Length: 390
Ligand code: GLN
Image 1 (spheres, rainbow, N blue to C red):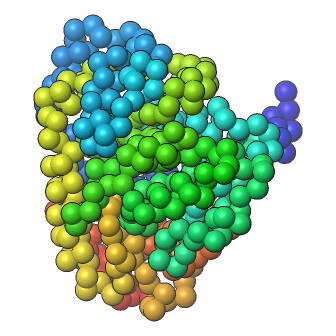
Image 2 (cartoon, rainbow, N blue to C red):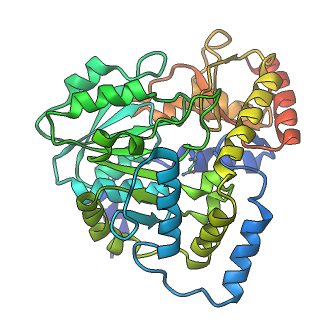
């Protein structure tokens, strides 16, 4: 077979390697402090690891049920009920997925037909667009405004009779901005006359700072009725490599979701699901503690990086901090990120990677889910590097 001839048939001809892989590889090659891809450089809680090992050795190593372990789904239902007063039926309305990226992809594919339009709010996480293309649907990008708030007029204009889905994300990656209850009310009013479903990516739900509680779509009955709410254990328990997440949706949406899920993933790692269920049972206070932990880390990061020369933007949630450098340099953000990694020994994500048209507002994204010494060394290197590069 002539494999060259496959090239023009690529389903994603314009898509390169994801920026997270590009930057993490570059950081590794050059021994850079990696503040690019979002993952902690510390381990999850020892008790969670112990639970995992215990289940592994106890022989809990065969397929889990397709929708996820019942005990884990019950633990999720309890958590979501306690936090958001939302009552999802674990039997029919909660599905455990192999990471949130798979959950989002499955939600897109299960609802869209070729030619359907899916609205994304840019900048947005880099898997949404390719997921939409793989479903043969059309990406309709709508820009967030200059403060990265929803542009309601632009969003209203983007809606057509072909619009099938809208993907939202709060706390927001990459900008660290959060939606508030009023935003959800506005969205509900906008969607009321339409049949548009919502995918709400809430993987950073337990990182919402300064006493402002996370506004979950699950807590908004009108929106909840048309939404897939997706969250992740990776972020919450410092185990991004486990790739275990979940999707809560009303019964009809969940039925469609599972129809696809059973043939995309079938089911998810068994000992990991047991360990998470055990840990959630033992430590219901963990999410609140995590929130305080990351708020403190955000403050620490901002204090350390405040005199590096970059302008730090507000950070209301997530473990990401945006920093502007337009006042210092005209270098494209990808170029600056590359040079900072190679010459300066510190890696960040260029935010243009989250825009389908590559718009470059001269902003870098830093991940502060890192140990104190990592952050301190990152700040030291960045300060020096900026002096020579820009
Ligand atoms: N969510 C992580 C980030 O934004 C990366 C996930 C990934 O690498 N696919 O950095």
